[in-house]
Length: 150
Image 1 (cartoon, rainbow, N blue to C red):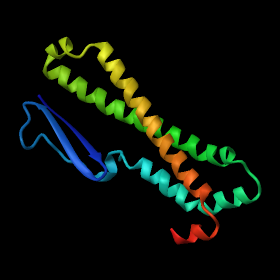
Image 2 (spheres, one colour; image 1 turned 60 degrees about the vertical axis):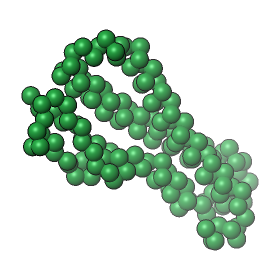
Image 3 (cartoon, helix red, strand yellow; image 1 turned 90 degrees about the vertical axis):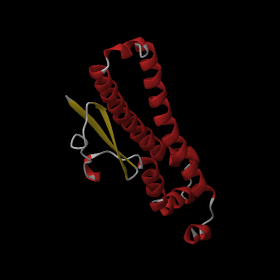
């Protein structure tokens, strides 16, 4: 039986073939069919596009945390969604590995998989939240004239 798993990470197409896979078993799908890992950069660019709104909110007296929170909240949700997608891909790969090599359970027990899942979720949320916070803070520190020179 042939199994193949394909991923597209930042525009680089990859395929993993487990078991008795021949050249016809690996099918590279188009970019639109796979989730990309560029969500963090999309968040930063979205914040860049709203830099004048950030400055306007600062001018009317909004606190930095009030301005920052919607961007960070959105980034945290995107990070959680990305972590869930990554865990689904990881679980699929482990399942295919288990189907082809049942002895893998001696190496991969549920504790190792749970710790891996926790780390993936933690870093998925932490990295996107931190990037959003740093980006918004960068625009909050800028003067009005500096917003045009970026």
